[in-house]
Length: 107
Image (cartoon, rainbow, N blue to C red; front, side, top):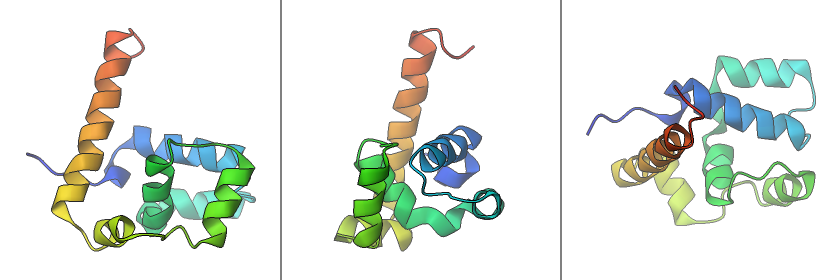
């Protein structure tokens, strides 16, 4: 299996940014630009966002930020480069892309 990190997918990077902006997490243009320059610095937030169902509401993001976005071993394993967890995230991404294609959202 070809293992590409989530931040190598422009769709993933943009989706996370879109929800981060909608929730108010990225409050300034500078913060958003910093994210786009080095999205891997937001690995904890990205893992939380994926596991939480990709929320875009301020309450969810604020509660997670209060917990440091790192509330279990799964996040720690991901940020340490756990291959099995990386594969699971990539499978989820592939499944979502396949769903988009089946719905005619992607050409």
